[in-house]
Length: 190
Image (cartoon, rainbow, N blue to C red; front, side, top):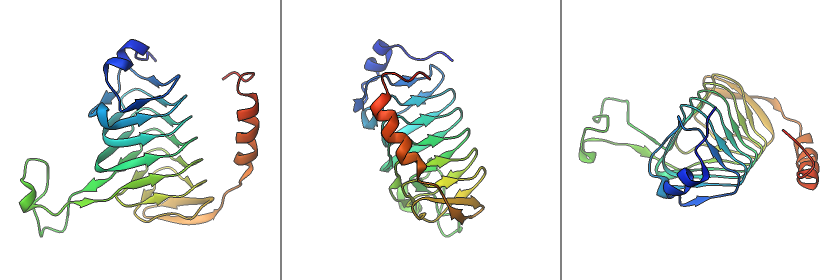
């Protein structure tokens, strides 16, 4: 995978760009002036980032993800992983038929839902899952592949399904590992 050089990243004029950020040459970035990316985070091939987005440190957005922050925004905490094909939306059309849909129609004919999405620290979202506007994915949540999140989650819980439902609690061992990682990060290799 080829990544943009530090000069190419600077030329994009991100709102904020931390140290050691890697973005694939094959990723699409719209509105970089609205996007902040923390230290040691990575965006892989064929990802699309657009709108108001804040990505924390040590995050991995794997190939083919869509993070559409729109106006309300998407906030992603630290140590978050979005697996292949994850889609996160802060805006959605009204599919009821009471209003018109799509970006070619003036706003007065539409009823878009626009709500911020928050994905807290130590969250992992499984491949091809979808997160809808207004959902808060709380700290430590794990979401199984092909799940649809239409409601906010509980902390340290595992969710699966369409729509996603809580399966069981998730281990907090990650917090011990994070402490070790931060203490030894200069000695660890990937």
